[in-house]
Every structure is written in C-alpha cells, then in structure tokens.
Image (cartoon, rainbow over all chains, first blue to last red; front, top):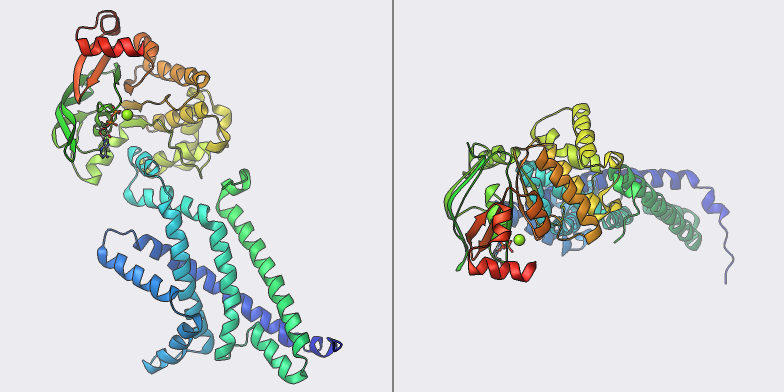
Length: 226
Length: 242
Ligand SMILES: Nc1ncnc2c1ncn2[C@@H]1O[C@H](COP(=O)(O)OP(=O)(O)O)[C@@H](O)[C@H]1O
Ligand SMILES: [Mg+2]
C-alpha cells in the first residue's frame, strides 16, 4: 500500500475552497428555483385544464426518464444552436433546476394526493375560496408531509452538481480534477473531495431540517410521526 | 320566517335514490335531531343544506340564501352555515388558534389581532381557552371536536349542522361535546344534528325527525315522538336502539 501524502493537496486549498463555494451557491439557487417549479408542476398535474395536465406530465416524465448528463448537454450545446448564448454556469443552473423541478413535482404530487377529501370539505364548508383551499388546506400540509423526501432530493441535486464539471463549470469536482492534474495525488485528492461532499451533505441536511422547523411549526412542536 | 327551508329535495347517486322528496322547515332557535338507520340519507340531506352535495331537484333556502350553483353563491351561503363533521376535520398542520382564525381571516378579511380575539372567545365558549397554541394531534377526540365547533362558531353562523359529531368518540368524551351543543342551543343557535344519542335528542331537541328510505317518515316533538311513535317503522327503529 502506497503511503498517502496530503500536504501537496492541502497546499491547493484555495482552489478547493472556491470550488466548494461555487457548488454551494449553484446548488442553493437550483434548489430554490427547482422547488418553485416543482410546486407549480405538481399543482398543474391536478389542474382542471387538460392541456396543463398533459404539459406538466410530459415535462416530469421526460426529465425523470433521461440521464442528467444528456439534459445538461442538451441545454449547454442545444441552446446556442437555437441562437441563445449562455455560459456554462447558466446552462448548469438551468439543467439542475429543471431536473429538480421534475423530481420534486412528483414528490409534492404524492403529498397532495394524500390529502383527505374531508379536509377539502371542511375548508369548503367554512366558505373558503377554491384557491385558498388549494394553498392552505392542500399545498402547505402536502409540503409539510413530504419535506423529508424533498430534503433528500435537494441533497441529490447538490451531489449531481458535480456533473457540471463535464461542461467545465469550476465547482468542487472540477477543482479536485484540477488539483489532481497538478499534483498527481489522485487518491488523496478524491479522499478529500469525498470528505468535502460528505460535510456539505450534512450541512445541507441540517439547513433543510432547520428550514422545515421554521416553515412548518408543527415540526417544532410535535415530533412528526409517520 | 323559517331559517331553513327544504322543499321536495331529491338526490340520487347513479341508480340509488338517496333523497326521495325531503321537505323540512326549521324556525329560528330550533334544535332538530335527525335520526334513522345508516344509509337512510341523513348525511346527504345535511350536506345538501350547505351545498357539499347538489340536489337533483327541489329547493333549499338557508339563512336567506337560496342554494344555487356557482362558487360565489355557495360561499355566501356557507358563511352563514356552520358544519361539524364526525371526524372533526381540523387542519392538522395548524395550531388550534390558527385553525379557528383561518376562515375569518381569509373569508371575512378580518385582521390578525381581531381574529385572535375571536378565536380566544369561541375557545372559551367551548371550554378550551388554554389550548390556543396546541396542535390538533395533542388533543383528545372530544377536545378536537369542541375545537371544530369553535372553528365553525368563529364565522358567526346563523345555522349549525352537526353530522354524528360524537360517533367517533369514547362514551366518556361524548358528554363534554353534547354539553357544548346544549349550551349553544340554549343561547339561541338554530341547529340540525344527525345523532344516535337518543337521550340527548329527547332532552335537547325541539323536534325529532326520522329518516327512512330517503324520506322524512315521521317527526314530532320529543315527548310525542319517543313516547308515542305512530308508524310501525319508527316503532321498530326505536325498539332496536332504545
Ligand atoms: N358520494 C356518494 N356516492 C355514491 N353513493 C353515496 C354517496 N354518498 C352517499 N352515498 C350512498 O347514499 C346512501 C345514503 O348515505 P348517507 O346520506 O350517508 O346516509 P346516512 O347518513 O343516513 O347513513 C348510502 O347508501 C350511501 O352509500
Ligand atoms: Mg351519515
């Protein structure tokens, strides 16, 4: 077994750190935008308009049944072909967001479908508008219900952002590859990279847990059993 | 002037006739106890009164609102008609206080502070003032049902509908809910309740109505209704449940 020497890699800490920050902000933006798309699509899938339902279903199924790297290349190489100039980071953000949008739509839809009819009737009997019932009686409890599953999907999005290295976005994985090529310490580089991703995952999970407690007061007050 | 008028209300689900010409008129302050076998159409009738079901034919006027299709007409009617369900149907993600404030705030556009005052006062009415910040799952069934009553009361309805509101409760929790309803009735609320609590119907109702095969088969003041039932069907029913 060869001995591991980490000092060469640590000497390039600046590169790692800037990759890490890039990964964090790209993931954060994709998660926020992706969940918005997810909510809209989940609602669209139970809309009264058939066109809306079909469009949403087509988008969700299209994204869930193709590899992320193909989606990424389609955006990065495809949009310029249509005359739309975008940077690698923009392409990465668009692909990550659309990908998460589809997966989170499916998760949120499951939460919406778990809504009991009697809840909607209770809202109606109180004189609530249709859209108020949708928001306050259906959507918010659905989000609360599926928050743990959504959180896991957010983490997957962060991990998938490593694939943006394929279009030379300078995120954490790219930083690792760069240091590898400079130091020839592959083993050490990727051990450190794995550690960084693990740390990021834990940080993300913690933030989603805190966000959940803030957004859904019941998670604070009652241990949610399921 | 009656607060509730139903005239020849008919309703079928597919080939099943559930309401076969129901007519009923309820005056202000009355407490109508609706009894009858399971499947005789009691719930469907109550649900027609606030538009949760749409009758096939017949006329319904509640608190001055004629039942008519269209969301706005329905919402206007529902603001004056409270309904309490067997399964409470509280919103599980909201505190007791927020459950109660939701409709006043969204429907009547009442401000936060005033809505909170209303919530606290209706909670006090049902004896649960200290539960304002609790979540539904932290309450017993009887307490949840009293919160559900309070939630309806917060809209200041002119009529309240209760569909077997104690049927899901253990016997020892039934009493606290019945007591709240009795108090409401004494304060002048017009109430229609579907119930299996014959003792309560006898004691609190101004009139008891017997549903049989989608019709009102017999009705009368409780002494007469329970003391001297006229039709063999009611006699048989009372024989089975008393
Ligand atoms: N939405 C519905 N669709 C089909 N059948 C229904 C529906 N609601 C009620 N029914 C049927 O109508 C009949 C009367 O129901 P209901 O009014 O609930 O009776 P009750 O409350 O007296 O027990 C029952 O046979 C029931 O199965
Ligand atoms: Mg019933």
